Length: 329
Image (cartoon, rainbow, N blue to C red):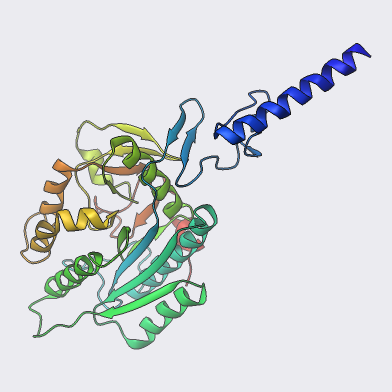
């Protein structure tokens, strides 16, 4: 009888302690079962609370001081041009429109996953398009709106006949930055040949909240782990996100996430980059990374569908074909 009474007393004390922890906002872990009794979760669930705290086993808790309230996804589309400055074929050798459609499909899936984890966040899509046929635009807009997301279409107006494909691309990039100044909070600028994992957007936002809270300033976040960065022996800082490792980088292409504040802060450099062609094209962006922190995921959360021999494309250690097939249009 004493043993039964002892177990009941122990159970009562545990329940009482859990209630106190809930009131105070602390989390507990039962190391024998890897369960989190305060939040009624286990190690297979994501255990962080968006906008409140980030929790990593072995590292503990990070208080979130930089809550993300909204995400604008700006996709620059052009379904008629394969590669802007090359005549090479892309991996899987499909029509350009297929890469655009699968990019959109993957982002819609990822946005739905994001809404499950960041329940209070507002997500909006903007399509900034250059010369895609009307049926392609209709298909893109319908795909997004049919899944319950707000979507805006901005056709890029070319006042005079463009000199080449790069000039129209630069006009699209400029338009995306001008539109970014009118957004609410975080902005994800995406080119239309990046196919994303389902968890990509949520992982990026978990990392953004955590890292910007740690460093007490806005940052840049990438979805792609670019292969060309492994060609150089640059020093990197490695950080832990929700389910992904991240490393600091000093270079990227034009698919990146940052805040409206960062766009406003570096607007002149960004517009200059999209107006005067330089080598590399992203030279001004790299200058910004000398002042600001930028992080890339390991392994990648998206694949850049360029030619298979391009060092700017296919991220290492990713099941490319599965990601391609999972987002069939």
